[in-house]
Length: 365
Image 1: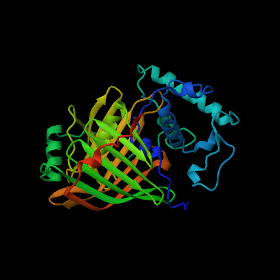
Image 2: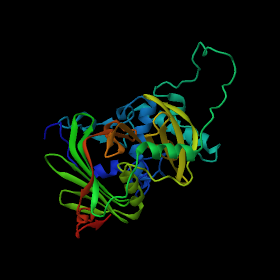
Image 3: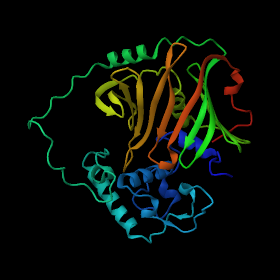
């Protein structure tokens, strides 16, 4: 298979569900040689390790042995890893540092206040000195910015998006374009959004098509001839994915504006809301336009918070409504970084409700 194409599998759904996705079982149950992260859910282990590597500016081979790589695959996916081997001194050092982080956070009642990135900042050598010379200006702590209320920021956002009329029954918004990933992997993508609770995303390569869908309280994913009805624990995550493609978000109940942050091309109001005790949603609203520019879902763990970031770019007018024609997602793993560039967005397109329903043979995961 040419390198420019990638084989779509069930892993596509797992990557798309975000950092918070959890499945039964701890990492220690499956990996008896694991020492520090035994209690971490197995589904979080590789996401966590990718963030550790990024925090230190290294890759997996800094600590782990790659005994039998397959160089016919793409560079980030050559495989051959023997994760439980302890040949490299760096692995023992990493365990020592992880224990230190866990012990430090115990001082904060278990909250993840200290992480690998706190000191390393993307470098193998930790940063422990402030830069010199100090910033110019008077030695006075700047006053905190005056922040608008959440009501005001949300009203500006709604106004910026435009008048989103209730869709007529049996019609939908259809979004089509390209799904691009690192190392030349790409596919065609079509997303269908109908109402508040129906969603279907099809990602197609010359070899196969993966479908992820939501129909009310039912979520499912299909890869080639295999169809799985997803468990209830995945439902909320699929709903959040579907929300990315709707013109207007649902307002979180406890949304509050907490600051201002500089993005690539302008400042944004930062607003947060709790999804559950360990998961926070952070929304970034462009100060100049009012539009949503970034969304972050952060899930606390015993070592590093897992993050799922979505950036919304290239807003255009679609029948009086502003919609992004480019969406970028990242969970901290370079191989998972995804850019979807849309060539066409059509609203109020006739659609058959049957497209959202799982095939009768779907099995529950």
